[in-house]
Image 1 (spheres, rainbow, N blue to C red):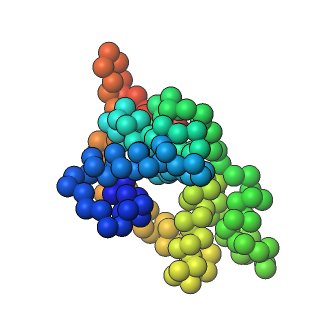
Image 2: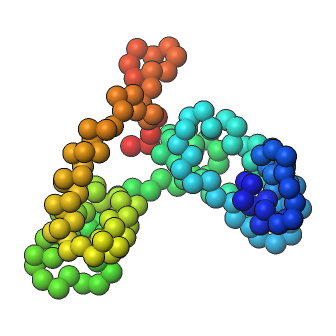
Length: 175
């Protein structure tokens, strides 16, 4: 919100973050043009109840929240994104038709490794492009790095919790 406030009033200095939030809410509440406010990765359960304090009172704007948190659908209209169909995933990953059978097989393996999830496919495509990797090289690197990432995964994972009155841990994510 501080970054948004600085864009709206570049010369204004804020003593605390609450001042920036108040300014953004005030400006967007009075704004007569269309606007979009995005809250990306609202995945911490403790942030969910307080997020409404950041919503401007306006009929001209829209608020987009991305979250894996099941309770986030209580904030308004919800659209759940699922996995991509194979052809869609291949189009996103390759950006052009596969040139040979091995490339197509590697692309399909990548889709499978990523559960056909759009964000994972897009991130893989960007990684492959930035590192100038072949698809088979990406699969090998993914397998190698997956093991090291899994070794560092904390034992207490944010998306599973013991909720009051429950005997077993509950998944807090949509999946």
